[in-house]
Image (cartoon, rainbow, N blue to C red; front, side, top):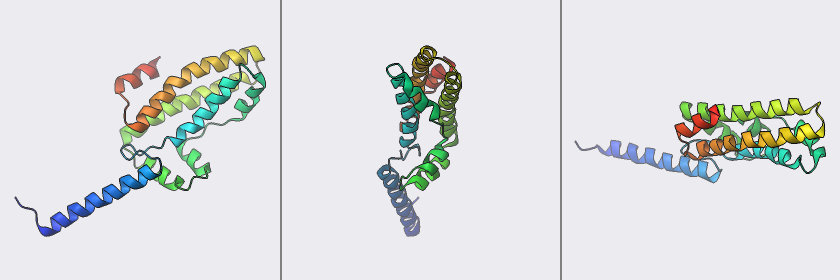
Length: 165
């Protein structure tokens, strides 16, 4: 079965549109296959960095206590990135199953960070240090999993293992 001239033209146009979309996403640090941007993980890297500072400088706990977890949308709405609307749109158009997994992993990170922050509020430095070190150990595998989801390299078995531990 041969394609008509208009079908060939339509297929070429669709391919050109897809190629342009892919390039636009790549140019703005959005994975074109997943629709997710690694910039969101900087939000969690900031919290982890603050936690890492607490053992050597307990006064940094106050900086951590002032940090607030943000959803993907909230993070980009508050950012000064020129492509923030594109980042939100690409996320909203991401495959539902992938987005649900990603949201589950980062939701766990937000839950941990919120609980650790609440626990630290009225505790002495020694307890804050212990909480910071434990939280880092819980967060790092989740951060790695979130990164793998963004880059399209996450395995369902790995996700289940990390989320169940």
